[in-house]
Structure formats: structure tokens, C-alpha cells
Length: 483
Image 1: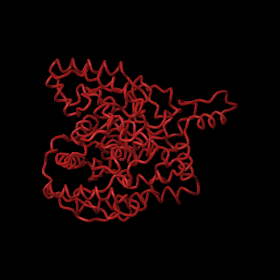
Image 2: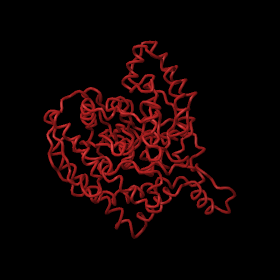
Image 3: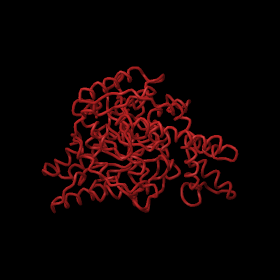
Image 4: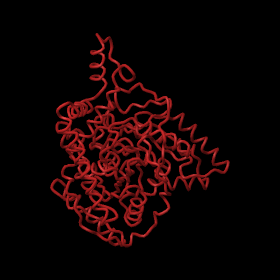
């Protein structure tokens, strides 16, 4: 049963081939057996999962249907979950049990999804390798010596290892798409505002967006359907109708205009990945797509702009964790200043501290105009480049990452080299666009992803292209040895 996709699980449950309770018990046993190798979970919620599975079986027995009814999933550990530890993979929140459900958690629970637990991640979602977690690094099931990508690496590793069919993630600069690429999954970052951020512990509020990680585009469509929708509790949520994301999966790609930016194939891209991306382009051409060279001239400024804006917002968002209101509190503080200093120094790991310091500096008097304001101007130029490009093409295609997964610890002494792994993904966050990564092949036995970007609220188009591609390729069906 662990090899079944979400779509296959939905059909199996509908045909009464197995119950949600049977499936849940099977996967919980599999997690107990295999996850010690991966470290993909922070918290398992066995009792809650079995309770939800039995409730889902009862709903089906009463005639209720639904693609997610009885389907097992897991949540990245920054979605607040009532009565369950929600740690953000940080010592700061190690003992925090959320007093409410995030909107994403509540919506998926209402749809009947069964939550098996909370997955490991980079601390406060800051990282590209899932090495900054207070609970230890997550391993890539394709090679346990390599990173799974971040910050949604726990969700990605768990799904890739067939511990469960799908999981939620969040994407601030590529944190769904990048681990999807490095673990042979399909991962979708929706349009900013498509999915509620209420109850999702913030890293960078103008960039964060929740989305699905699964093995196929079809499964991502199912999970996104349960997650998306307007939420009046979230001021950044957009009141836009939610289409049926599965409805047009089988639409023809005949005449689809695909833009390929020259900037995506510049120095720094592994030539073996470039070859796989060009093979994907040829496959889509066979399906009727028309390829058009385009340019995104301001992409070269994306990394510096992102690494001013994101840390600036993080320094503001994380100021609430001060040892007074909630979060880790140091022992026996001498005074209030000592309480603040030691609580934050003890509670936050090195990467989080680094980004808070960078962000506070960029927002400080005398530097705000020089750094933060300039970065926001670049952000607008990047958005304008996309708007110009989308006047000529329907989607944009390129690599998801410049390199395959690197060895655990290989970039620890050089954080900037890790930041550069986000070079192809962060532009979508700066512009608020939807983006998807799908499997495109392997380099040295490690997975590679191809990225698709679309205009605002065109997630259905991305899913359609990915699904058609997956009907004619088998990369997404490959599973790591031993899992």
C-alpha cells in the first residue's frame, strides 16, 4: 500500500479495497521502521491519525466521498496544530503546543485527510539543505550521505521514501520546489495569497506560501484543492475563486508557448542538468508545445535582493520570540536585558541568528534606503520582467536547481554557496508567481528537477503541463533503493 499515490488511494478507498485505518496503521509501522534512517519526522501523532482514519471510514460508510477522505498526509512543522508540538525545528519552540489549527491544517482535516505527524525542516524555514534543524539533519533517501533540500526537506524525504503519499510544505525562496527536485518529487508553490498563511509560523511574510509535495502532478492537484481558498483571517489571502485543479489535467499542450530564459542556462549550472532540461523541452515539443527564447534581464539581481528582503522580514517576525511572551526562556536571568539576550541566543541556531542580524542591519537607520528600499525596487523590476515575458509565452521553463543534492555538511563553512542553490527559484517568490518542479532525470544517481512558472493563479496550467509530461515519461515513478 505504501507505493500508492493519493489518486490511487482515493480509488482504493472508494472501491473498499482497504480502509483508511488499515492504510494508516501500515504507514505508521513503515515510519517507525524506516524513519530512523532519514530523520524526516519531528513528531508522530499516531493516536490522532488513527482517530481521524476511523472517522474517515465512518464518513465513507455513510456515503460521503472525496479524494482526500481517509488519505494519509503529514504537515511541515510550522503549521500550528491544536494540541500538537509545533516547533519550527527550533529549540525556541521545542515545548510549544499550538492552541489552534492553522487554516491549512483545519481545511485538510475537514476534507478528511489523516495527519500522521509533523515533518522536520530547516529551523524557522531558513535553509536550503534541512541541516539547520534543532532535531538534526534530514537525509536524502536517494543517498543518505546527501541533503534532501530545504526547508521542506522532511516532507520531501518522507514522501520520496514512500513513508506517505503526500505532505504539506512552504516555499519562501524555493523551499517546496528545491527539495522536490532533489528527491524526485513534484512540488508546487501556489500564487502568493492562493493558500492561507494563518497559523503558519512566519519567516518572511511577503514571500511565504504553503503548497503540496507529492509524487505526481495529479496528487499535487488533489492536495492543493484541499488547501486553497480565501481566508478572512489572513490579510494577504486573495478572494479568488478556486478552480477544480484536476479538471484540466488531460488538456492538450498543442500550441502551448513555453519560454526558455537565456539567464537560466548561464555559468553555474551543471552541464549535465542543462542536458536533462533540454531533453524535457524536446519531450514537451513532441506533445505540441512551441519553444520560444526569452530574457529575464534582472534575474542576476534576484539573490542579493532576496537576501536583503527575507532576512529583514525575518528579523521583524522573529522579534516576538523574546523569552517573555512565549518561546524558550533562559534560566535565572539577571535582568530584562539579560533575559532577552540569553533566551534568544540559546533558542535560535546559527543560521537563524545570521539572518536576524543581516535583516536588522538592513532595516537600521542609515541603511534602510541603501539596502531594503533598493531591494524592493529590484523586486518590482523582476516582476515587470515576468509580466513582459508572459505577454509572449504561456509558461516559463528552466532548471529548478543548478546542482544535484550535495553531501551533508559540504556547504556549512560557506553559507553563500548554499544561498546560490536558490538562484532559479527565488524569482517566483519575489514576484508572487506560481511555480512547479517535476522530476526530469538523474545525475550520478541523484534526482534532478525541471521548473515551470506561470502567470498569477494559473496553477492549473502548471499541473496540466506536468501531468502530460508525466504521462509520457517515467522519472516520477522511480523510487530510492531500500525504501
